[in-house]
Structures are given as C-alpha cells and as structure tokens.
Amino acid sequence: MEKISKFIHFHYLTKWVTLAIIIGILTGTGAALFLIGLDWATNTRESNQWLIWLLPLAGLLIGYTYHKFGYKVVSGNNLLIKEVKQPTERVQFRMAPMVVLGTIITHLFGGSAGREGTAVQMGGAIADQFSQPFKLTEEDRKIIIGIGVSGGFAAVFGTPLAGILFAFEILALNQLIKKGLLPIILAAFTADYFCTFLGVGHTHYFIDNVPSISLPNFLWAIVVGIAAGLVAMVFSQSSHYFSCWYKQQIKFAPLRPFIGGIVVSLAVYFIGTTKYIGLGIPTIQTAFTESLLPYDFLIKLIFTVFTLSVGFKGGEVTPLFYIGATLGNALFWFIPLPLSLLAGMGFLAVFSSAAKTPLACIFMGFELFGLESVPYIAIASVVAFLVSGKWGIYLN
Image (cartoon, rainbow, N blue to C red; front, side):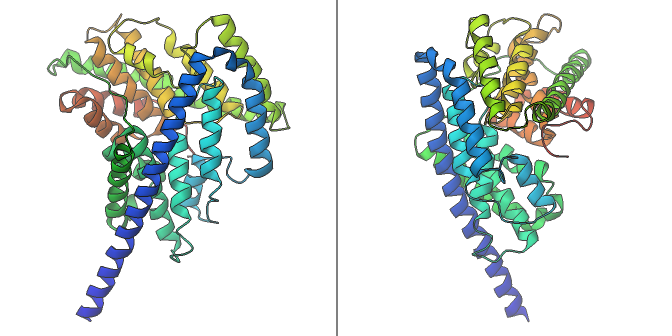
C-alpha cells in the first residue's frame, strides 16, 4: 500500500508540474507577443491620430466577428469564472486569438481599455485545452483554469505573486488550495519568466517617499480607501448598468461598438487630447510625480465604461490603475501625504475594490513599490474592498 501511495503521489506531482510548466510557457509567450502587439498599436495610433476616426468601423468588425464566431466566448472573464463555479463544457480555444486581436484593434483605433482581461482570457482558454487530453475531472478543470489565469496575469504585469492570489480570489479556489497551490505558483512564475526572457519589459512605477505609520496617517489611509471604494463602486455599477442598457436599446450586437465608436471618436476630437484613451500609461506615471487635473479620473472612468460596455475588447485593470492613480493625485490637494504614495494607494485600492482582490493588490504593492509602502496600500485596499460591498467588475 505504501508503494501504491508513493506512486499516486509521484503521478500527481508529475502531471501537475508538467501541465503548469507547459501552460506557463505558452501563456508567457502569448502574453509577450500580445504586449508587443499592444505597444505597436499604441505607438501607431499616437503617430497617426486620424486612425481614431476609424474606430466605428473597427467596432463593427469586432462586433460582427464575435456575433458570428464568438458568441460562446463573448462574456470573457465571467465565462472562466462560470466554468469554475458550474463546469459545463471546455472553453473554446478561439477565445484566445479573438480577444487578443480584438484588444489590439480596440487600442489601435482609440478605445479606452486595458490588457489584463485579455491576458487572463488567453491563459484560461489555452489552459482548458488540456482538460480533455488529460481526462481531467471537474475539480481538476478548476485548477487548470486557475493555472491559466495566474499565468496570464503574472506575465502581463510582471507580478507573479499577485497573479497567484488573483487566480485564487476571482475564481474562489480556496477549497482547492492544497491541490492547486503548487501548479498555480509554478505557472505564474514560469509565465512571468518566459515573458521577460522574450525581451518584453514591464512599466515601472515608484513611490519615492513613505512616511512612518502614525495615527493621523493611518486615518488618512482609511479616507483614501473610502474614496477609492466609492469610485470603484461607481465604475462597477456603471459598467453593468450600461452594458445591459445598450443591449436593450441596440438589439443587433455589431451595431453597439459601431455607434459607440462614433461617440468616442467625436469625444476625443472635442476634448482635444488622447490622454483618456488606450492604456494611459504615460498619465499613470505622471500621476506619481506631478499634479494633474482633479477630474482626470472621472473622464477616464467614463471613457472606459463606455468603451467596454458597447462591446470593444480589453481589460479593466490598467484603466482602473489610471483611475486610482489620478484619484490619489487629486486627493493630494486635501490629504497631507506624499503625492507618489497617494497615487500608489489609489492605483491599487480602486483595483482591489472593483475586482474584489485585496490580497492580490497587497502583494502587487509589494512587487511594484517595495515593502515600505505595503502598510498604506493594505489599509487603503482593504477599506476600499469593504466600502464597495458586493459590487465588482466580475461575476458574483
């Protein structure tokens, strides 16, 4: 019996370690190619801003493609969550190329979207293709989707620890921690390594001044968390409401991003700047060093909610980073904490609240900003998470 037990244990380790490494390599490579494509799309758009006028046609193309070929994968991250909670059928592989191309097209022509959702969907879709060849049970499928999610998140942001916790939090894998922890960890670090190995770098942000924790500073961190939670709640509720509203008003799905593209193009023209479309990374970086317009976070929120609600593709997380960092920047006028610290707290607290992933955000704070800032980020992220209640960007 002891020999049989050892064989079973060895077989378990071999299977999951092999799957985790293979999926990590595929996801990290895919994320690297995706990030290269995204950089190309952003640079091309900024050098040829007339492309923004073609956003309606790009929206029509994305909408028709999903209507014709991608109706089973159009719900994106929520489909992965649903398959973990109530497994029904394998996630179609087409989710990966469709969301990658849809996101690059969205950015090329001027939509306001992110990249995390794309990387997570790509990772989940790639991972689930192994469920049938390896004859995985429903429980095992939950783990393998978690492997893909952690790998995608880790690779696209360069934060493997946050990727691990992100997978456990949004997929609610707590009951599978004993069985799934090792492969999910391996996939996150493997994906991050291969993305970096292929020469793809990640954006760096810096908090240059972290005061010691005191009672007043503790209370100010709570205030930041409350503000971040309220803003995240507005983002989440608006996203769900307008997504449903557009579906009711415009029955033919391809017309939604077409009409939405017209609105976004005109809005960019009349505002006279492209700072609120795309990822907005230059503005995020500036939020850590210079005072910005106090309403930047609100305009980015409106652009992103509208872009994603009408059917363009991309994630919510980088826009949430933008909204949070510029919110923290605006709070500098009222809160006596360093500007870069406020931007960093907002950066992660809004994401924590909207995605319902406070632990992932705390560890992401450590990976991005270092250990000194973690107490402030933890306070703001947890408070924001509590303030927003049940409202989040993902399926409840």
